[in-house]
Amino acid sequence: MTKVTVKISDEQIRGMVDRFLGWKLPRDFAPDAGISFRPTKPYEVDEFGNSWWPIGTNLLHAGQAEEMIRHLLDIEDNTTP
Image (cartoon, rainbow, N blue to C red; front, top):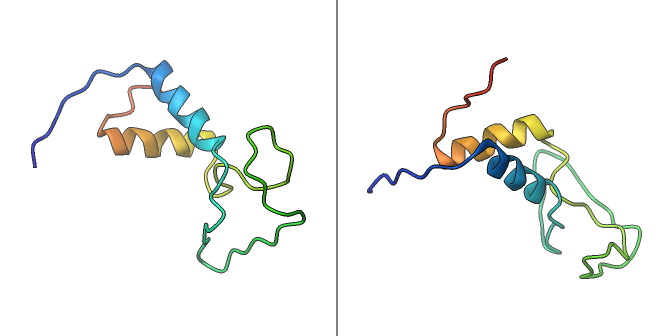
């Protein structure tokens, strides 16, 4: 496997985090570890939120999602703690 180096800004990473956390989960998503979801309204494929359906994930907060994106991109976190 060839490693590709890509320059990406912190702003672009934050944009990816926002997109990930705002993504409406697919109808057939299957949470694990005993997590369950029972919809209160029918599933609607509607970007305006006309039905209640989970988005992103409730397993990660934004900081953890950023760590995940950086891991996917193989980028070291260059922020100071």
